[in-house]
Picture 1 (cartoon, rainbow, N blue to C red):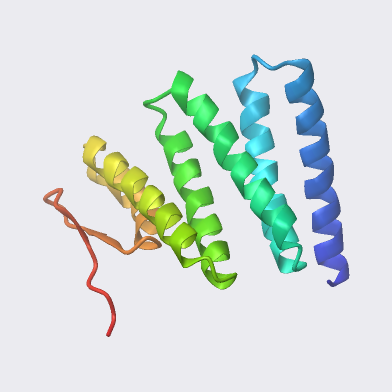
Picture 2 (picture 1 turned 90 degrees about the vertical axis):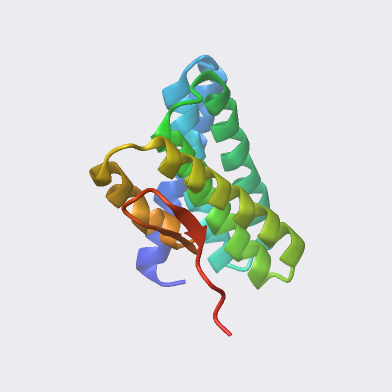
Length: 155
């Protein structure tokens, strides 16, 4: 790991530790739990790059669990749904790379379902355009007339 990566990891680890303390001290705070979820997701990416797969998997699960807790209180929060989908995409790619195809598919399907729901609920072309880059990572295609489908698999 180069100096920049070590420095980034140090900042992310510190953010994770501080967020964990804030969540402990203020368990009712959605903002602190959301910040902890972001830090867990980022630290999982760092741990994966270091071949620390067990820690990475635990951190991805923690990020998803935190975001799902928040989602129960805020079911219509599109940013939160996009964050859950993003973490599921990251975790699915991790699972595929480490040979757990079944988990990778399940996580991918979860992300795809979140993106489909967001696209169906989003009425404006601008909002759909903003969601599009995220959806493309799951293989979804979307037309302006609000039809959503899975892109054909490359042969």
